[in-house]
Amino acid sequence: MFKPPPAVKVSPSRPMEPPGSSLFNDHAADKRERLKSNVGYVKSMISRATPAQQAKNEKEFNDVVADYKTLRNLKDYCVHVDLDAFYAQVECLREPKYTRLPMAVGGDSMLSTANYPARKFGVKSGMPGFQAKKLCPQLVILPCDFKLYHKASWSFHQVLSKFDPDVRMAGLDEAYLNLSNFVADAPDGYSMNTVAYDGECQCNRPRKDDITEDDEVISSGDITCTICGMAQLYFNCTMNFSPGIDGMIRMLRMEVAMRTNLSCSAGIASSYYLAKVCSDINKPNGQFILPGDNDALDTFILSSPLKLFPGIGPTSSNSLAEFGIKTVADLLNHKKNLRFMVSNSQYYLLTRIVAGVDCPPDETEESTNETDNGIDSGKTVGTESTFTPTSNQAELVSLIRSFAKSAIESAKGDGVTSVGILFVKVKLGSYDVHTCSQKFNEQVPLTNVELLQNVSETLLTKFIAKQGKKDIRLLGVRYGELGMAPLSKVQTGLKSFLNKPTVGGRCVKRRKLEENTDPVTVIDLE
Ligand SMILES: [Mg+2]
Ligand SMILES: [Zn+2]
Image (cartoon, rainbow, N blue to C red; front, side, top):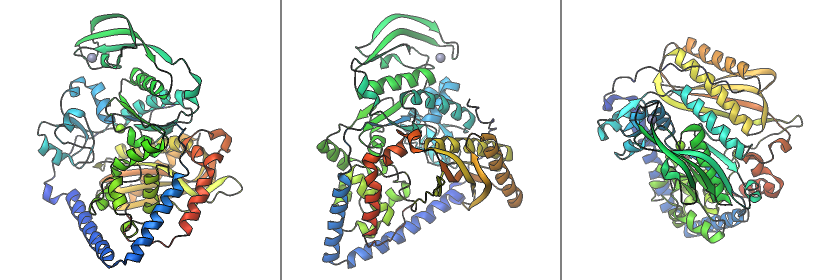
């Protein structure tokens, strides 16, 4: 049974740093400087490229995309579900008044998320708190409470695993499911008895707005909410959902709402990459289906902003934007020069995005070396997270234990059953990164949560003892030398979906494609 991670003691947010002197700004300026010099270098390479070279680049791009397009599987239903402004929503459950007031979670150095009222002022996740306060002086910034978020995430996971037992969590607030088989066996649709709420009280979900004309309201009434003390209207109803994927996902979202009081958005497409882009379209509390036909796919992909795709982080998207590349359509206009702009692995990621097919999760890593004993020595799996820099040891220990636990969850999702080595990553307030590791004498099963948490904690406390009391801004736990379950046990998970026989050819194909090219690597984007 799941045991929530130990309590995280949160410190009050620290005093505002003067913008000019903060580490954040130094670091950001540093990054901009590096980006500028890289861009200058690439532009000079482009100006010297011969037409023949560019024609060759263009042909290569078209060939690679055409080849990847043969891997499209239009009948698959890949689903990405994402909780809306997760930390902020959870904080609103604890303190309902923040539903209406601009609020963010994080600290002065970085915000993890902002609620929708704050977003109206331009406040965004990843933004330093002091900057956000300039945009919205009345913004309330709450410290992160990971214990609470892990609990909510666990309930979310439990609902999702009823729909796909091999659901793959991609963080606390988002997950990938494969519902290709599931939707086929309910020709009459689905129904669910629930209560929807309205009124001044915002504590409970689903909301009355979630009721459609297909649903039946059986009875209704008004009471006073026991949590916030405000007027609450309730509607006992039977929600009916149409057969097929649209109804199924609507039911899934209502079930998440009912069990967690949180709203989520979903994207449905023939690949996980596209599903991720789709889940953003009708956010918050909405869903979007990309029809599985080639023309619809191509049109959709062309207009999509690159930064929405998994694997395209802020560094990549900022760097590409320097060349005027923001959408996939822009990318196509630059295909003759793309080789000069990105690293080899980014090149293949981008061509896959254009083709609308997924990358195996380990795309950017070196080849995996699965040996006879089923131990994969090349791959690792883990979790890491940035937070308000702190040197509070009790708080850091709590965090590392909860990361050790969530890394176990994501390893399980990948079909891992045991690990041979554990890494702890620490990023200091000064942005120096350190990694410590512990090699085990024999494989440790993932069921031994306590041991893996203890080892993570020991590595961290030893590190702190050696370094002295310093601010830490990121922690991560990663497992390696992974013992894998036999494939049959993870048949429908994302990983095995990507590797199952019908699409297994793609990995071989990919390797072949990549070996045959003579890449020009200029910027390593990430
Ligand atoms: Mg989210
Ligand atoms: Zn209430």
